[in-house]
Length: 429
Ligand code: UGA
Image (cartoon, rainbow, N blue to C red; front, side, top):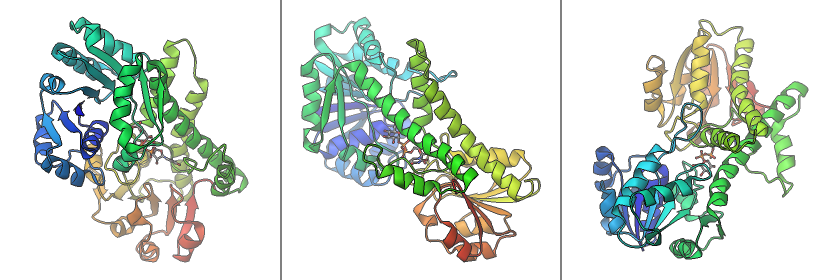
């Protein structure tokens, strides 16, 4: 199938490359000349395991093309994906200006029947917004259908998730348009849900908000566990074995970050507000997430008798492992808090340090994990990178001023850390 994907961020680029890998003729479009140049050379502008190899292969085999011209890509395609960013505006409402701008360009270029697919995460009702823009641009109704096909990939495992989705959601007004996407995704042999536009748009928000709620629930339980000496990991395990609950996204830690959960929880609160419903439960979910990190810093401060003049070592900066993304990363909150309370910071992350440098240019960035421990008064594990799992903890403890470890992701366990000489603190036990 001839496919255009507008926007080469995480969602757009991964979708484009995977569809090309499946043998479709794909044109990825972006308005950033730097990204276009990189993609033409087979260099992905995002960090994502596995994407470079797939990009190079599909480029060489002639399935993947790059362009800066939306009109040209639309003319050559049967299906056009809109996969541009919808960042939160000042009040948390998703900013649809990029979606609107792209829809305008598509509307101008439509000459033959084309299925326009919204893959960006958009508030309910956005399918109609796109449809109206296309009409305003003079595109006759019979020349297009607007379809919602939300994306559920995770950063860090984006290629795998796109090739192995739990479900594919297709929302459309007309069955014929949905069938076009059914054909496109048929090679994946995964369950597909065909529904209306509004329901498809809401499935995306509801899924992310529900997953964030699950994490906030277990993080709230971690506070109860800390107060009574129970162990949150055992509580989660016991809950998760009930098939109705499930064991995923019950890992207690510093809370959820990244480019999606914070934005989408906010987005759903705002959309609901606009529709006359006050989604109080999600407001509590957000609040638990915010206090989870500050509570952790409070515990550190209390244990080491104030942070003033202390040296804090931080392992991990990315919002989660296998990504260089630091959007809403808990590391940023922790750095800000400990600096505010008078400490200095030395930190290491395998790939995200350069991004954090732009926000905090004055902290010390180390070349490896062992340097982080050197002379530190406390060591904090923030991101559970694989590289941190089998470190020589004894070597780390020996180089520290005070052998205190605060494990924000429950990575090490008390027995292992204490054996290495650490005084061990974690979340929820
Ligand atoms: C999330 C969803 O999982 C994807 O399905 C969705 O497509 C994506 O948002 C999106 O809307 O684009 P992502 O933000 O890449 O994916 O990362 P997750 O792996 O879901 O992690 C989100 C946050 O939750 C991270 O900060 C992670 O550390 C935290 N988390 C996750 C926990 O604290 N505990 C858990 O048990 C799981």
